[in-house]
Image 1 (cartoon, rainbow, N blue to C red):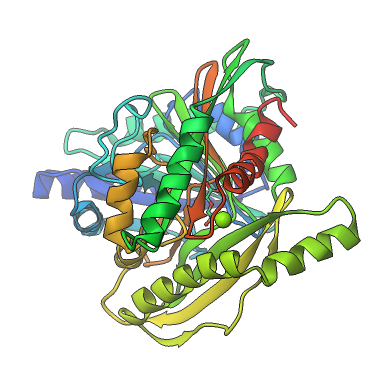
Image 2 (cartoon, rainbow, N blue to C red):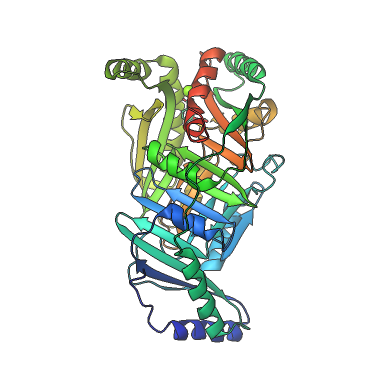
Length: 463
Ligand SMILES: C=C(O[C@@H]1C=C(C(=O)O)C=C[C@H]1O)C(=O)O
Ligand SMILES: [Mg+2]
């Protein structure tokens, strides 16, 4: 049930048609309405009747959710200047856009959601054919749940030849479809096969990397591996997202749909959050499983805190993020030591980096400077990405790339897409990696990645 009656909607649309005719180019109109709280999974499910290009984002705190349906505008870019190109498309697109919004809540109005592949030079080959190097979508409809309130944003692209009454009628019909209460699937199909992709070769690559690190070829490299699962039927996204939201605390829950395929995950790792020029980035590296008892959990946490190999893995990330943030911010605050960051299956070393972003920089500028951090690539940054390109057998696609959202007031948040899976019909590829340093042990790193596969396995018919 909508609470806002958008005053003079006919006038708003009529003015936009006139402007489109005068300027001979389409006009963007964004309208924000307040409504009764709506189940985001219900909205997502209903949205497929409008368009199979959908987006889902829930903050790590769990109190902010966005569901995007369809596309008012999708911006793509590729190559080494992809961040700059996307920023330029975004800036150009915002020129002349008009927003009708009485509330001004973050994550409402003109918002773009999407992500970037890990390595722009790794073309979107199999299995990532449906996911370009960079893609940000301004949805046609956006549900934003903030605490106990819900907002609906409708984004119109108005053309010179449009008819006002037709647009308003179509708008009403589509909102009716979106608010229709239709039961969505609550379960995931049965897993019929599970295949680790070349685990022994992966362990040998880890061993080789430790030797190369000892020889001074590089200081750290993150190496990832793949697990392929087959189901007895097509996997729908709603039950997967609902289960992740209910079980993976302290994690961003995300899904990006492209050509009927989904990239979905529950990542604990913020890359950068920007709100009113306040910038927060996160150093998350160093891992150990959770304990079965409170006493064992505490012991494992202390073991992680004082383990030289994990502290070195972590410190590389802190130094790089601090340097990158200092280059575009002031009042940079970095704690002297990490703390434990507890998740359902494991715990990490965690160091927040806080700063005030210098005027003239945007969130995309920050993402460009950070990605990939040594937590996802290694150190030195360029050398480690080349090492991954040459030694890793999998195509990372969007795994470990930045994913998130930004609005037209330079607010937004991006995380790195780990603890994630690419779901393609009745098949899924799950990805997990780990930081390799000179003291890494291949078997221990293999076991660390096995724990990192659990969040997605646990909601894909696993345990
Ligand atoms: C690369 C991943 O995780 C990263 C590597 C970590 C590590 O090696 O300790 C910890 C958190 C992440 O920064 C992954 O989960 O796939
Ligand atoms: Mg590790």
